[in-house]
Length: 245
Image 1 (cartoon, rainbow, N blue to C red):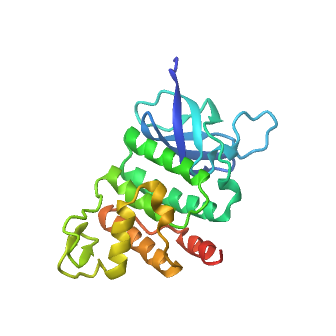
Image 2: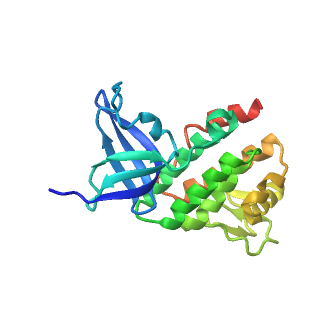
Image 3: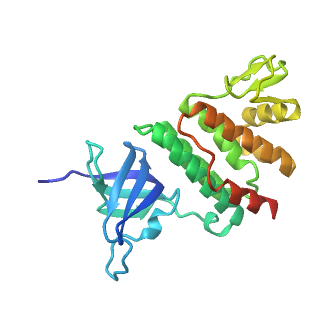
């Protein structure tokens, strides 16, 4: 049987070890959305091995050649190369912590948005390239999460901004306080960050406690609006890296 080989633009979402020597890799592709591939024997050290496991680090941008997979079955990769080689991400502790945190966020999001979504893919790619290029990343992951909601259907509604509360459950301003309301300065920072252009987020100067609260609000917002979303396991490491730098 002849297979139609396609060139796909892919973002590595995560890997699962299969047996002693193989990996199952999940990729979010520009062309088809979420795709899964079996990489047989990739964990063995063979001199003539064509595909290295280093290609499949979290959120690596790849160009892969793979047979057409119309039935959403486990596919295989014929060839792979980097679409873009990150310049600073592998060497910057803060950026790496942000990257691993966002990898968990994206992995959970694409499970609920598995189909082809070129706008979502381009959002991921553009923001990752931006993360690689900028120096100050303290609010990057929070702004990323807030902007991501535009692509997955629950972007916060900031109408009636004079109301004293923002209700995370409804995603709207409110005059009634609930268990998941934001108020005062936290509400102001939430609205300010939402209203900023992505490249302006470095201009918002917050202390560590304010950033931590804002991030927790973003996580709670996702938990309330995505059924399967859970707080990323890498959150603790993220806090530790940011608190010591």
